[in-house]
Image 1: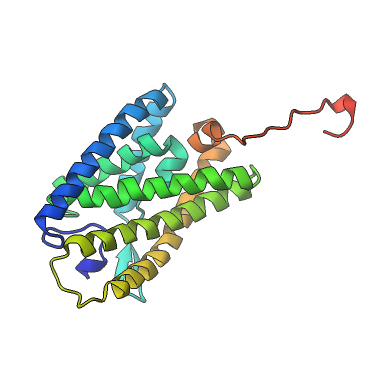
Image 2 (image 1 turned 30 degrees about the vertical axis):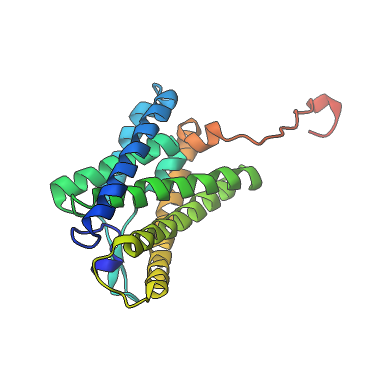
Length: 239
């Protein structure tokens, strides 16, 4: 059960590997702060607080994965990337993870760098890469936005789970007997199911915000097609 958890508990990964990823997470979050300051404005700053609070609240709601005997909850990387961008989004998820570890004991404090790397950094980065690609391919409609949010959320969860597999390969405290591929397959299968739930929550939330205030969806504001066809005046023929 513990090896299937995305919130890694103390003792699952050895100390040296945990320390390396803690340093990596600190450097990456510092870079996110520097880049995120460029995006922060009167519109994005309050939105970041709302996103962090929403992710924190929704992560308290677990849905069961009956085929694996575990439960899953929203990671929030794709949702944050869609609404506040990759840099501020990673910081939002990281803040949630820190509060959960320090206040609620969800994930070991010594493993915080590992959890931040997987869920705040890898998950958000994978989600935003897909978002930036899909929003340039799919039509800018509600359906296109919903598909983008769903796919990005699903993939980000699976990518984050494979980050744990890498970390366990580097410093897992229990010998798997060379069955690392089995662990990777199990993690991918379980988190694929979790990703479906996350995709539905993410798509619903993003579409709701976009319907009321599309200007608050960072992805819609910042991502533009590389070649934009100028509009043809109505009097000039086909628009």
